[in-house]
Image 1 (tube, one colour):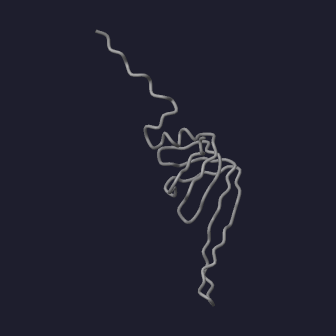
Image 2: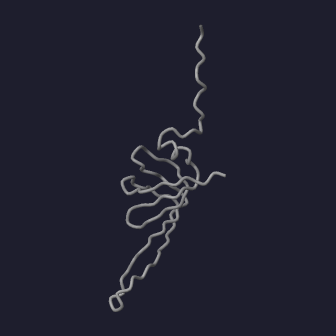
Image 3: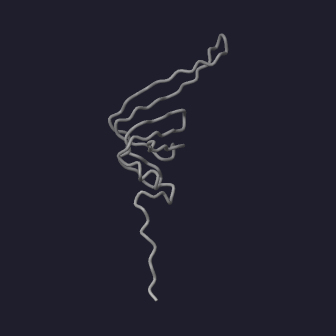
Length: 101
């Protein structure tokens, strides 16, 4: 009797958490970092620690200041752009792949 082998796993299948990141290579992704920082850019490379190299990056930093006279919180955002950026994985909270319709 001959065994029928199972079909090869789909190349685009997500079986492990980092597979989702692998499928996002050369795509625009969203990364949330510690310290109220967010990045949007193209993922060029990553490793198992979630260190990433991103291109065409827009960073958004949310800053909460307290007005000392009124004690009200004043929220402001600062945006910066980078042609290329290395992201250290220990600061990563969330990685969101591009939406696939």
